[in-house]
Amino acid sequence: MSLVDQIRSKNEVSSPSVVSDGERQKLSIKDTDFLLNVLMKSTFVGSEIEQAYSVISKLAEMHRRNIES
Image (tube, rainbow, N blue to C red; front, side, top):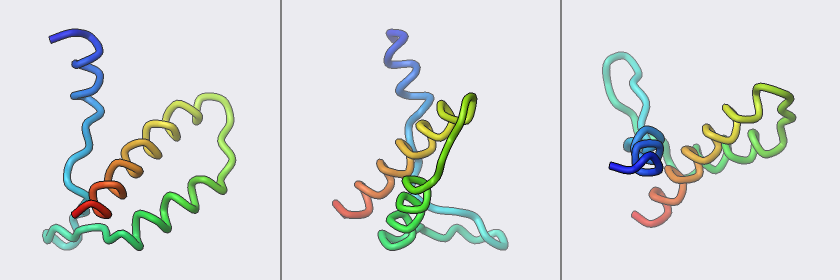
């Protein structure tokens, strides 16, 4: 497995869901859209930028999968 593949597999997004009271709850299109909008309006500085990029990328992938399903 190449280094690029290892990095991609490490950053793969699991199904868009959260655990609440021991039950798995999926994030809806409306949920992921809201979170993306909030994050896009936010300001990030310094060391936060890399983490913000990672989170936004994963959330965007979840949102894309929600729309396609």
